[in-house]
Image (cartoon, rainbow, N blue to C red; front, side):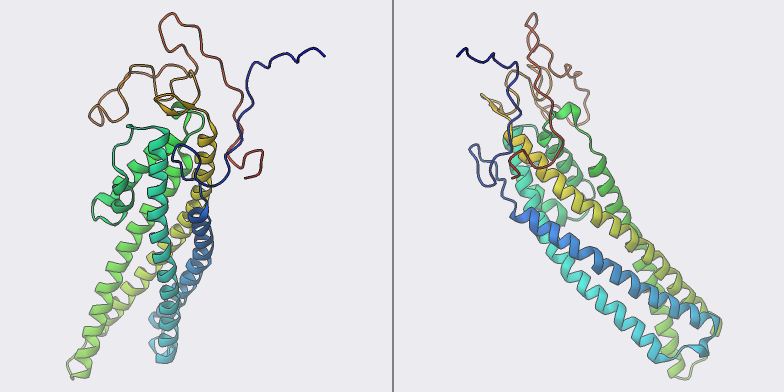
Length: 321
């Protein structure tokens, strides 16, 4: 029987089995699965918080329309419901924060295997930057950009960060709006409490001042509801982000490693033209030489590198792992 003609390209490799494959890439899905579950629980918890804030906002509106139409019991019930919903969300949010920091550091360690020497921050910052004041406004995003670039199966020049950027923007906007609303609520609530104390001591209290404080509380609750809606969107995008980056790293690990370079397509320079300084070697922000077209010759006069077969979309490999 004549031998079958050789195929010009090897088939795209399936994602490796979940676990610790050779090369030190940790593809265990436990943390990613736990994060996916916790985000799925966080979303309804945020909806519950939104309902509680809506109840408080309605009571404040009724009070402003007619102070005698609202009883103290109604005010207490609205506050208790909102407080209980916030407590539940706080427990879930704390769990997500801890799992996220551990998972994000694992991503960073995997990305170092994929593209050694191309990252701006060490693996310790991958976890610590989230809890460090001031720098947590931009360090995590820069680390995430490096991880995303290194984990892209198509190569760093082909990477698209729409999901990553959308999640970061919604998360930061939600945090900023929530901070503004909390400050506004605290200032007006304290003002109202002071007026109530003055009334108990028999001091004269201007009713206009009390109504202004209640108006400020109502407005702050409206702003807080807006921040909660944005945070729900950020939680949904966060869930999608966990699934996406997990699939990306599994597909990246399935590519054959290059000798002395790490994981990548054999014969194709994975991070720019040959001889170029590694990403991060030059000062951040300095101009970098343009990248050679994907699949172009890596040496002058050399024949073009063979083009790989078409990449599959992100998701489980053919084996279903």
